[in-house]
Length: 270
Image 1 (cartoon, rainbow, N blue to C red):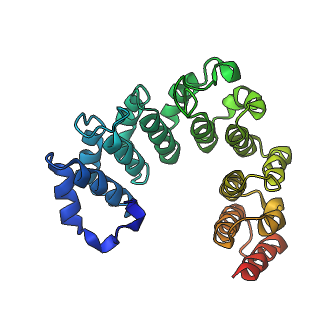
Image 2 (cartoon, rainbow, N blue to C red):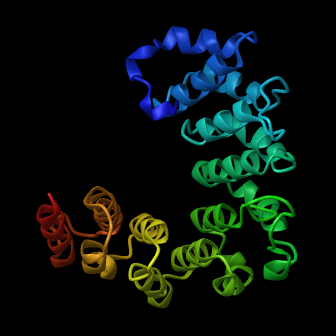
């Protein structure tokens, strides 16, 4: 059962902490880690327990992965505690691709400049090294999450290393590069790559582009967001991201014409 399908009332805070602390039932620990991140429980005790869970050896999946580590890494990104940074950096060496991806995403969310150089090292070899992992349905590294994290961290020196990934064979990596480069340079040409992706034939990729445009706040993409073939709920999330980004950067307390237009588009989708 997916975590999102489990009632939020199925745990209390005390139960979640107790479940994460015990070692007998890996499923309870797995769900507790998700729950504590989902509800952003920022108690120092919780952060300490989640950091400890990043070294768990007991909860293993049939493919040899570490499900508890994955959830703990994701949760730590939501708790704004920089004490997690060293342990998350250690996760970059984990042989579980999904643990690495969760750690990378959380490092991007935590926003600590110390993480830029370790993340950049994962781009070594550039596009030529960004191949499929033999026998696996994914690349050798989670390049989309890695490139997005560098954009979130404001790693402007990484722009020249990210640029070639616009030509990567995987569209999600291309979109991640465009998203990151727009964040790092502010150049509209990168935002327009994401807007063009909204006309693509693959729904999953259109959804990804929607989230990317909203995340970086590319306001000229507002109309394309509203018109793309995707769920209205996702369009609203994307437009909300545009509006929040725009308002955060606005110098005036008065709504701009762009902001009003985005709000009108949101009303039309309700």
